[in-house]
Length: 277
Image (tube, rainbow, N blue to C red):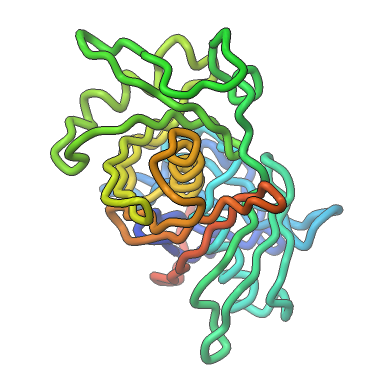
């Protein structure tokens, strides 16, 4: 199986052109190739497939084999993959995902994609659609108990569920301890991606993320979008801000006119390879 390893600010996946390759059991393949000791090493597997309704389809699997609806960092790399490999000559393309069709605008330098702006669509705030168990219309600063501590969470879906909470010192926060407990808390029927955020100023937020099915990753694009939306709902930031993640920065904007969230960030190729599966 031929593959390309790529990353979006450190969120790394193995990309396979499934217009040419066939993967019989993507869940098992993702687990095998994602292993950083016995495989290639990644946060998961991304399959690029044909689509009847868009230019391409993206399917993605986490390192534990679970399929995810959407990944903002991965979809930027899909844009770079299809353009750089001459599968398209368009700089604006549509990608079908389990979270709907996303539109990508790609910035080209020396015939290669360097930056990608993704229309991530409207944020979903309805608890039953996120899903999260709540009697409220929108979950803003709702207390949740984890161990002996209370965390106030704001919940947003960007096609996948996110719970955002605020801390004073995000770098020294015990994410490995709190993250998995938040992910599997019983108020989240399908588990959750947990973001922990430190407010630098109204235009700059710093975050770490515990991803559902993957643990801590260097970056999460949908998580950065959820963080901006949650922070706006809490009155903590402007509608456009720089989100600082461990792997790098993303620019996120929640547009007032169309209610869509836009994410801009880089996409980087690491290497091409071939593996026997």
